[in-house]
Image 1: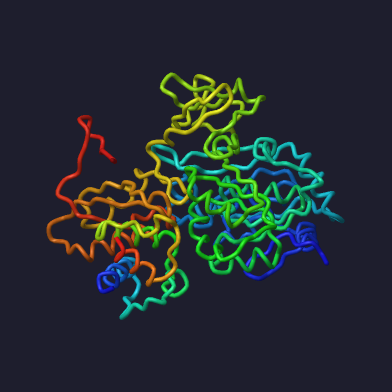
Image 2 (image 1 turned 30 degrees about the horizontal axis):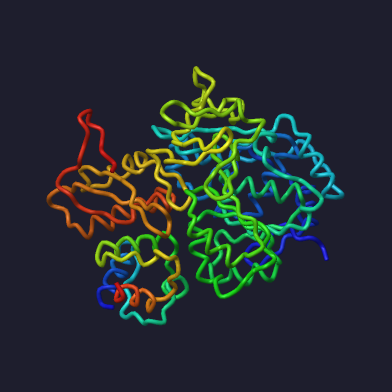
Length: 415
Length: 74
């Protein structure tokens, strides 16, 4: 049987098909902006850019035209394609992997919600984005449940780990939770990497059984949840559990067993903790970004940590201004700037509400114009948000208030 | 049950969906009511505001009936 590269919506895409499509592809583009983030098209485009060594910018297929505009781009430019300069016939996938690893000019650019104003771009070379990818013979039969958005950092990490070892990816990101146990069994999934939110949601469907073939369970993108880990240990008794700290700026940097992260020996001089206990990362470990160009050599993560010993630390708090909804970082200012435009909204404060499903959720306090009906305005705000923003940026609960708290400098208080 | 139906309908209505007439204990939150993780998060926050119970505290809620048990068992 031909080896499967990707399984998505019951369709099996083999490595054979991927080779043929790479050999026959006639177009290339500087941007990747794929409707619904259709994973085969996303992955094919990324591998093609690597093989022909041209840079590519990844745009989330969920972005609305307005969000694309806020990145300083135009949809027409983003969708522009050109003919490929050359075509190469690839005979086997080892050839592809070798060629990928020899890329020189290739880099991938991601957009991340900045803490102020416009989202910032970060570009990574092949070396920095695959820093933590492990390629060994004993990994060649791994089968991955792919549970991330494929255009974000965590998704890319799993993608490269699987691709370079020629593993099979079972795309479960937009799959019904109910079907996941069946997919794990059917395709013999051995590795899962997902956010805590994903695990919490799939848990009710898994707990009837024990999945002994799962050998690795990875948590990424959100605060570690020890209770959840305990429950997953019962369902996946043979799995090694790892917690990964990665960011768009730095890629994947630290791994932890439980909540204690380790700084690897080669990074000891490239990581420091300020006297205020903020985690700082040396520029040489980061992707390239104009907005990251600081005068000192250190990138301030905004995450507060506590050292346990010379090489281990735990987190005290994560990036204070950003709200983490199920693994997606949201800048509340971006949402406020948009929703203040809804007729009838006088002022708006977007803040976080803790919950046991997605960790945090966006809620909004709104001052409304006198004449407006509350129920109608709630609907309008939500619909306006849903049209212009990715779904996790939509405030789910809206309350009407008479005034919003602010600090003496006039900054809104988001607590 | 009525209060729960009202809250679920509020969520549906604000999201621009039609309301539903009745709830049954056997209804699956994800499969029958099509609540995704963001909607479940919204539901849990609203129920916590109303009843002071975190229905997802121990992570395992699948049906309307299970919510009722948690709300009544507080």
